[in-house]
Image (tube, rainbow, N blue to C red; front, side, top):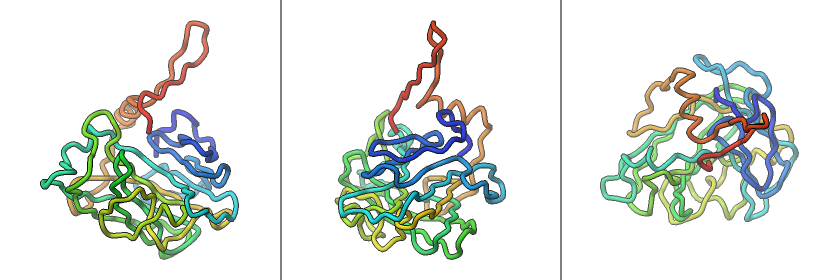
Length: 247
């Protein structure tokens, strides 16, 4: 959550299209203006070892319709997940680990899906104490079916559900033939006005055990982000913004 080329730490509000917040992360919803996203929103102290986080804040108390979704999401390029061999009998498991903090308590939903939106795995993570950083780790079995990108197309989409409707939720704990955004029975953040969800240190890796966070030099991280977004200056001195890969 260190790089924020587009917004420089300013708050952004969800629309019905994807809105980029910190680099490589975007928010979206089927109704506009239901929540905001901002680097270091609320100015709380991040967990030890981290200097930045992404904060989501609900703008009202809203109950999603059955087919409405609200999410924070990240898409992994196919080149970066080709070694997982998903869609084959050699599929490898992965582990997602991160730090989470919310003004609400209970189970929150997360869901992985492919580019075709026909294979999905939902899981939940628990925040037992309000306004306290909690370390979360979720192991997901390798997916042996479905089509998974292995080039510069979308490989895996990671969705943090913020209160989607019933049609976008599935039972957690197994791969399913579904287009899903989250897990059933989880806390809907957009359902409580002013509710917050803060996240940092998100890491996805091969295997069934979460390892220590892989810190990278700032220059390396910035260069990796510039693969997907860059700002150049035209001959008249104006900025040209280019998203080189849609996340």
